[in-house]
Image (tube, rainbow over all chains, first blue to last red; front, side, top):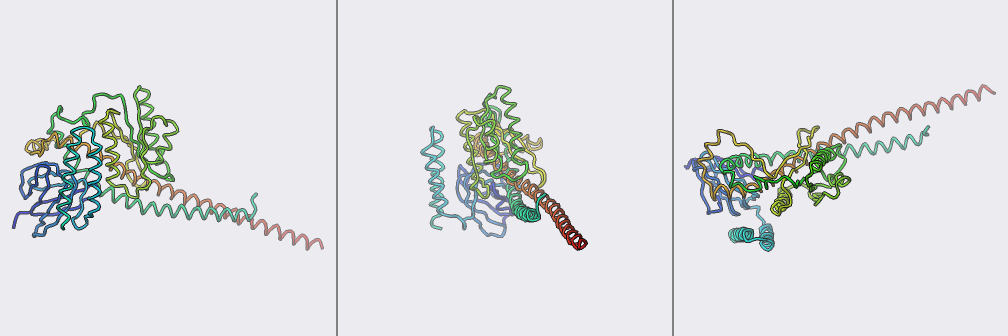
Length: 135
Length: 292
């Protein structure tokens, strides 16, 4: 059995998960990463995606997060998500709404930098929509 | 001297008022509990955010830091975000925040600064409009929002950062009421732009040097600071919500008690007058009988 470590998933509204886990897959901005116990200290921003948490005991829990960042230390990992929802409770209309908003942002973006950012975010959201829809 | 009928009506109406204030007090108590829970639930996020920010701010050297943190280098145009409640009947809650803001405005104007105001909540706008109607550039109302969510705070924060990016102001201060306890709310002014980075504990200095950042620290920081502003505003809104309910509860408790006092005073007057009338009638009967 893999060594477990402390993982916390926090959204501004509340603490969603605080548990001993074996591994966590985090959708980091520069690619997904799996965090296990004794990981080197890393701080990374995250993109909209699915966080898969393997709880001590082998059960896998999935949460959809929309942006935020993760603070990884050898003894634990904290994920500060802008908003997070359990996969079972995710609502397709909600994602569709976010995509629409992102599209509006893209249209409103004034400069090149802003446009690139909005485009990136929109892309991530659409990927996410594609990933969840069959479920 | 009011007649017996007047007194009876008066007592009935005060009793009705007392019932209302009593009900409002109980509603406030229930809402207070919910607001407190919300404020408590939000605490882990802002705490961790503070810790992470302190950590990362220590790692980023002064020149790389985003302007949201260092400021524009000027101090001419001040933006005041005044967050108050949407509803009245909560004692001095709204006026206390407004008073603090007004003192601030007066001081800034005296020093020759330009002041702009964004009000969050109807009551603050109502109070500040009397003196500084021209300075208010935007009024945000959260009247339709039942439970303040992060989305609301985020929208306000985005509004502010956009204005900052457009160079509309140099310094932004947030006014709200800190929830100390049910009976005490302290109006507070907090500067959010330029953000004062929380000082990193000395012991963490070594830890931050071994951190890996992905993407680099500067980018994370520039992503983090706007988010931190949202969190600060969210926290302020939640504190306000809890404080408003606390103040309302106290105010309504006082009102209920006052109504009780008034009822007992009116009842005594009523009884005395009734007695006096009976005595008067008796005297009339007796003196009538004696005259026979």
